[in-house]
Length: 160
Image (tube, rainbow, N blue to C red; front, side):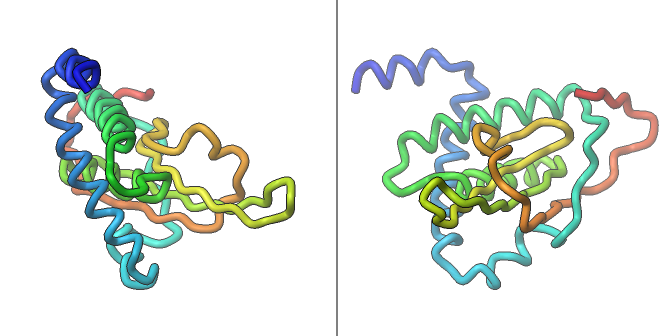
């Protein structure tokens, strides 16, 4: 326990705050996952719409990476199951709060025994926020794009 506390305290301050926020969002996402999908789908964004793959502000790249790290850390310590869909929904809500667009992907595949498997991952710009580890093994069957207000004119945009 002491080792975990030391590890947490060694994190940068902005990550520590995001870990607590991620923990709360993971809990909320887990509750949502227990509901019928038709009830939560409207909150996931526009069906079959993908957000842009280009042009993130440098500050957005930092935000996305920090949220990704916080979700990964917090998901290890939840008292409930926090796997791909729960992580993707939580990260999407954290990005939405910061007005950063994202796209949630849902995919299916068959394992070696022929059983159906599902996976979810989240992308913002060219960055995969959650679920990158196995996303290439799945065929996309659903996409939900979360739009955010347009950026102001004249802002510098960076490709990642």
